[in-house]
Length: 486
Image: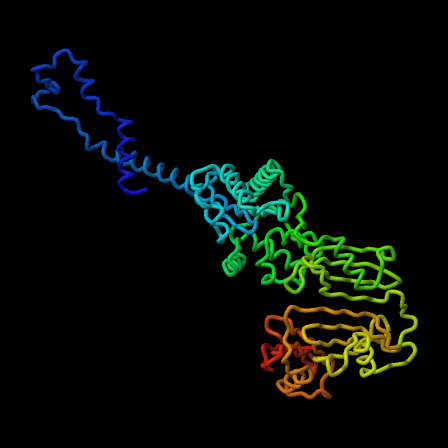
C-alpha cells in the first residue's frame, strides 16, 4: 500500500469518526441570516473565550496512530503467507495462501507447470477454487489419465495441525475431482515444515518443488541403492510405483488409490520373460514378491521365485521385457558338506575357471576380474566378479567343489571399457599408502564401472590403520582416500 493510499484511508476513517456537520448545525439555529452569533462568555473583563483545540492535539494524533497501526496490522495479516501448497504430476504448480486460504501467489515450478497455469489469474481466489482449476487443466492437457494417474500434494506449514487438516481436505477434494472425471486417481499427500534448508537446496539444484524433493529424499533414506540424482527426473506416477516397493517405502506419506502401470508390459508379461530366460514353466514355479524397481536408468519389475531348490531373482525392463539383471542361488545345499570341514580348497584359479565356464566367457574376453576368498557359515567360498563390455557378472563358487552357488548378470546402459584394471588400481592405492601387497591384510577391490565417474574402490588394513581409496578407472587418478584407526 502506497503512502497516498494510506493517507486517503486515514482521512476517510477520521471523517466517519468526526464528520463536518456545519450546515446541519446552522440549520438548527433560529437566527442565522444576517446575524453574527457571538461565541462569548460573561466575564468581568469582557474578553472572548475561544476553544483551546491545541490541548486535544495529542489525543487526535494518538487516535490516528492507533488507526494506522490497526490498518497496517490487518493488511499484513491478509498478505501473510500461512501455507505453501505444491501440486506435482510432472507439471508442478505452487500456491501460497493466507490463513483464510486465499491465494496470494500462484507460480509454475517447471515448464509443464507454465502450460497448466496459462491464461489463469488465481491471485485472490479461494484455495479450493484454484485447486479445481489446476486439476481441471491437468486433465485437459492429458497429464493425468489412466496411464499415469498419480498426483502429489504437499503442504508446507509450520503449524502442523493446520497443515495436516489442509492436507486431508485437499487430498479428498482432488480425489473427488478425478472421480467425477472417471479417472481412478492415486493421491500422495504429505505435510512438511517450511524451514529445511537442505531440502530447499536440493529442490533448487534439480529444479523441482520442495514437496517432490521431500518424497525422493525419504525413499533414498529407505533404500541406499537409490540415488537422488536418479529419481529427480522421474514423474510422480513413476515415484509412486517405486514407493509401493516395501524397501522404498517413504516415511510420513499418505496414499490413496494405486499407481497405474498401464504404460508398461504388466506383471504377467514380466513373469513370462523371466521364466523363459530361466528355462522354467509357470507351473513349476513358486512365486515370491513382485515389485517395481529402478535399475540402470529404467523402470523394472523385480521378481523373486523358487524352483527345484533354487531361488531366482530377476529384474525385467518394464517397457520392453528385456532381462536387465538376474541371479540364482542354490538353497538346497547345506553347510554340512563344506570345504572348511572337508579340508579341500580349489584355489582362486579354479574358482575363476568355474565362473568363466558357467558364463560361457573366455579369460581373454573378461576384464577387471576380482577373485576374493571368504567364509560363509563355516563354508569356504570364492567371490568372482568380472566384466565383458558393459555386462557385469557376479559369482559365488563353492571353495571345496567348484559348484556355482550363486550367479548374477547385469547389463548396464553404459560402462567404462578402457580401464586401467584391478591390479593397477591396487598398485596405485598401495603405493600412495607406502605399503606392499604382502604387508597388508584384508585387501579388497570392488569395481564401479557403471558409475557417473567409473572407479575402483580399494580397501586394506596395515600398521594399525584402515585405508580406503577411490581410484578413477580410466585415468588412475586418486579421487578420494581415507585413513582411520583399525
